[in-house]
Length: 385
Image 1 (cartoon, one colour):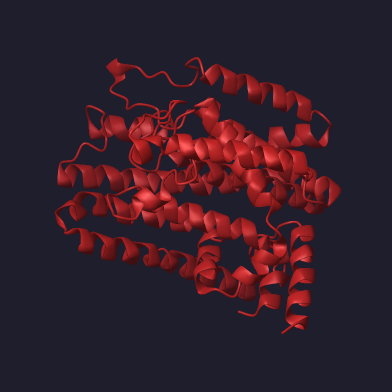
Image 2: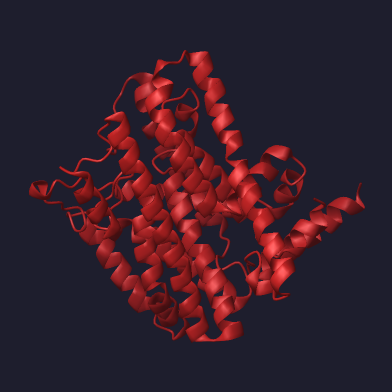
């Protein structure tokens, strides 16, 4: 696809590409393979889920606030809840498949005393089961999104900030992480009270971008230097064990925890990525690898659901393979992620052409400024060819 055509879709190419990378990293983290050590916590304390949740909040604000400007608040609320319904039904489908697989293979993926208890607790969004623990959290985030976005637009972002910060601080003392052992529920992987901070932060930056028709984040060389230093220190600390046999000093965990250092590292890494010139994106568009990641990121729910299905089987079968075979299987799994993305893209394009001409009913659009910036960079680049 020519660069001009990709840019005309008014999506932020970098955001979709990053989401695609995070999807690949999370997929590789769900089954044993030789690539996982290079994709899990490579840059420090933060990892793929941190960036993925943050970008989801960012995109949700872009999409729904622009839709609100065009169609009104009631239409926006309906659109938000339709998306929440889609995610919830996807969660239910994965829950059913996961329960059946656990019964058939006699695994311990679901820890409840009875499969029916697993299904009920999962359907009520109370129990995080299997690998798809992130979807119940998304359902809750979307359910509150109309309220959060309304407060932003009415000048009460400070109130949302206070509430979000209070929940995050509470999570450091156990809020949102308690489970009843008598109920047979599994441990909490994603603490809702902690991880909402990523989503809300993304929504606030997205709101600022829509309101000002700019990036939503200012650029400061002093802050950039501070983020570089902090990121490097945390990356070294995270790798102390593998480099010098010393345990990380700041309590690193290879699981999605709510360590304050993790949040700090994610913020610093995100700021560093924001400073990368847009001309780099234009150059990356010419490489198949990055275009593949961009395709995945544009169809994140479909790719994520597919990855959960395929890795649920691989996690139980790949253990018997040799290291070389494991590597081949891992690469094939990554390539297979393009299948649901391509199918969903083809379906959406046919539906848009066949039923209406409303651009808002087709592929989701993002605010124009990032695309406009990239279009200028693209024109400058092609003028030199």
